[in-house]
Image 1: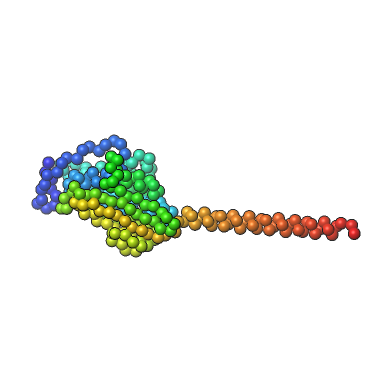
Image 2 (image 1 turned 180 degrees about the horizontal axis):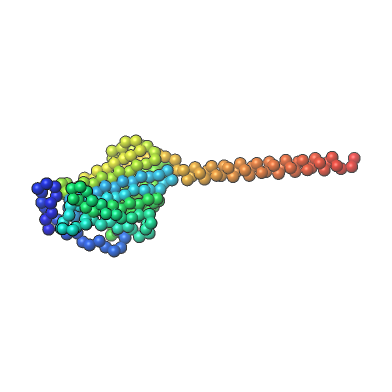
Length: 235
């Protein structure tokens, strides 16, 4: 089948298979959809101070036939209610869908990004914490794609400054533009406090202080009672 990819440019692309009914992982699905030809993909992720992740993935493609709705993203099993899919279109006729998700844990994001086929080595994306540092790691394998057919961007925003990484970092944000025809590694390290741990420490200090104060009050009351008994005792 031939489709128009930009002004006056036609090329042959395979007809993509119908979406499978089972859950489709985020980055794995991205890779499969990109194989269809002229595709634009944008993934944006925001990490909150409590290590919860919110973001979206938009995938648009040049229509391959009349009435073609473009790539159809699927909400993975177990995330219904915190993830949903809506239709997306662009002014130039590209069409597809938008997957949004909110309040995911790091582990849920890793599962979301795992490949549905079990080939987790091709598309990886994970976050992990070690003390006050949060490390992002992943890779996107676009070796089967032609450079003139795809436009991919991945953007991540942290609640703290990005200290290092192999993307374009500016303040709390880092961006990658994976190149078709190769494997792109994604790495970044951001520093910000774990508010969950801080809240637990504050609560422990409050409980400890309250317990200590209660002990002092009990000791004081016992001392006063003892003094009264001594005064009331016959000489």
